[in-house]
Structure formats: C-alpha cells, structure tokens
Image 1 (spheres, one colour):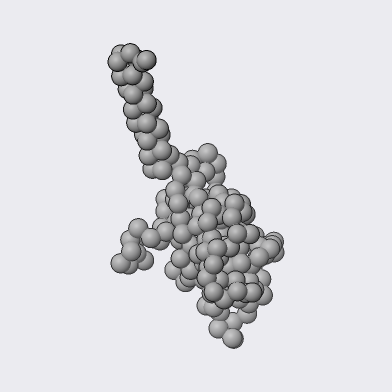
Image 2 (cartoon, one colour):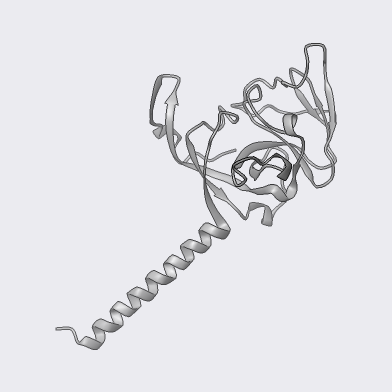
Length: 200
C-alpha cells in the first residue's frame, strides 16, 4: 500500500515533467520549428499543393543563404495584402551582387548557366514579351532573387522584385503530410509516397 507522501511526490513530479515538456514544445514551436502548408502550385513538381511541411526557423542563424536553397518567407511590406502574415516558398536564384540573365529558355548567373532543379517546369519568363530575347537583372545588397520551380506559373521576383533578406523566415525540412490529387487519381487522397520526403 502506497503512503500518501509517496503518492503526492509522484503526482507532483508528473505535473512538473508535463509542464517542462509543454514549455519545451512551445519553445520549439516559437523559436525553432514551424508547420507550413503549400497554398499554391508555384513549386510543382518539387513541392505539391496540399503538402504540409516542417520548417526550420534557425537554418539561417547558423549559415548564410545559398543559391539553390528553398526558402520560406513573407512578402515585402509594400506587397502585403489582406493576409499580412501569409508565408511563401520559393527557390533562391540570385544572391546579393549576382548578375542574372533571363531568357525564355534558361537562366544564367554571373555568365554561368544555372542548373534547372530536377523537378522544375520549363523556365519560361512571363515578363518577357515575344519580341524580347533576354533580360539582365543585378541583385542589390541585402536582397535575393527568388523563383518558383514551376516557372511558368509562379508569382515571384520576376513580378514583384527583390526579396529583402530580413523577410526570410526559415527553410523547409521535410513533408510530414500530403493530401491532394495526382495525375493518376484526380480525387483528393493521402499521398503516402510523399510523406517524410526531404526538400532539396
């Protein structure tokens, strides 16, 4: 038979452990990790509409942004509409000081052809008119040029300009849930094959 004193100590320890665990979970949620839902088709086929992603908020406290990184960010202040806290996800194409050459067929950075992400759609630039053959862009200090991998259907730096560095919120880690259609099944369903896929 348990003594009353032992029982009270055990429940107190359990309560303290639960409070400590809750504090750690809240701290991780606020300062380290975040959940993000893909709201559009701009990163297909790298990331699909309906993917749920775990985000690291400390990646760029530990290292600099690199060309080719997939980042999560908020829009510049002048472009925020009714959803000021809405987040976006794109790929970094240009770093501060880079010179970009955009054509209908390709993107070059500092006179070097930029590799196309494996799952990216053709890099057609919707801001180039049929008469234009190319467009040159210089990325200013403290800013980045970002594009969606679905380059023919992406609202990105080609439309609204440079992304200030202080608007970068973090980097995606992996897909923890995915719900939507697929080419072989137009009905929405759980896409089991996408779960726990790391994002590159």
